[in-house]
Length: 283
Ligand SMILES: NC(=O)c1ccc[n+]([C@@H]2O[C@H](COP(=O)([O-])OP(=O)(O)OC[C@H]3O[C@@H](n4cnc5c(N)ncnc54)[C@H](OP(=O)(O)O)[C@@H]3O)[C@@H](O)[C@H]2O)c1
Image (cartoon, rainbow, N blue to C red):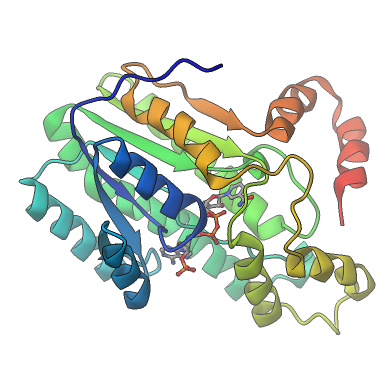
């Protein structure tokens, strides 16, 4: 049995990508814990749905700099220029073999998962610096430290998120602003459904040298069955609470069995041996 984490005094926390999955679950869980949560969603209908559920929904599209600026201003206006935590959760996966990814598909993947996310961080950092306090929680992935086939754009975006986070942590080492990466394996959400939409929109499946293998990719993306070791989105709450509330948060929190198992294996095995292992897991 895990020990309960003591409940803190209310703190304002902004979370991106709360229309579904992990973001929605974190918004509910952190609100229930007594935090003041600002739950970002990019579509107006989702903002309304969040409000109908009793959450402080606000419009925030990571692809749109103006939306980011407006959302930060709204949060600071509502809190008297105070913000304790930023949870960067909003993201999507662009499936497809690396050779099938256009510059545009790669650019879109990075616009959301990397550039928009970093722009948001850079907009809240002056507030964190003025307070000399703040927590940045980056929802990364097991694919932030190991790569699986047909996920090259997403792998690269999460590696980039990890590199920016590791750098930022060093650059903030003299402050009480902490950056933590959360690295989940499979979590139940709308991730596959959203990824399938992007696959169809940006990959010419019929023209691909990989078209035969794409049948398995499509089967995976269309399936609603859990892959082994899948956890519900609620499993993310505890590590996020630790990253937000510990006086000395860890740089990384791993979630799900595959992440715990593969992180040390990746460090120990020579690359070619690790490739052989990854090939077994690939589509
Ligand atoms: N599920 C997994 O197995 C898994 C594993 C490892 C890591 N993760 C990470 O967990 C995080 C949450 O994903 P999830 O599994 O909960 O998937 P999800 O259900 O698809 O949720 C993703 C959220 O990100 C939002 N989003 C997408 N593009 C956005 C943009 N331009 N601006 C703002 N928000 C945007 C989505 O909004 P819309 O509804 O408008 O598209 C949605 O709210 C992501 O960072 C993902 O990479 C997930």
